[in-house]
Image 1: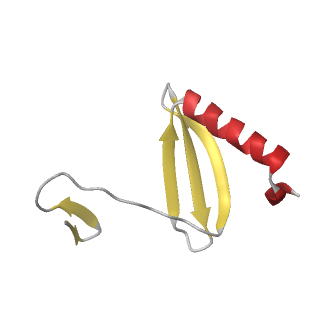
Image 2: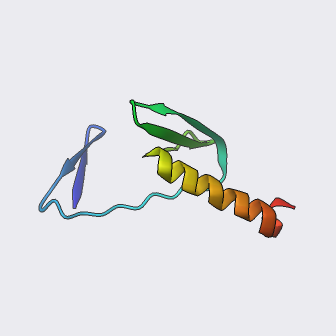
Length: 78
């Protein structure tokens, strides 16, 4: 359980929590450097909801290869 107080999230109880975030209808998506070793991907919808993900370069390369395969094989890119 977490507690929301004055816009801050406070842990309540044990620290063995998990979370899931989903953002659909993304209006903007950008990639930029994050520190010395990671890439930050930022996705935002038209309501101002935002998801940020920091990945190491090898993970970004893996995702890039996945997208390239989809471009070749999937009707999504037609």
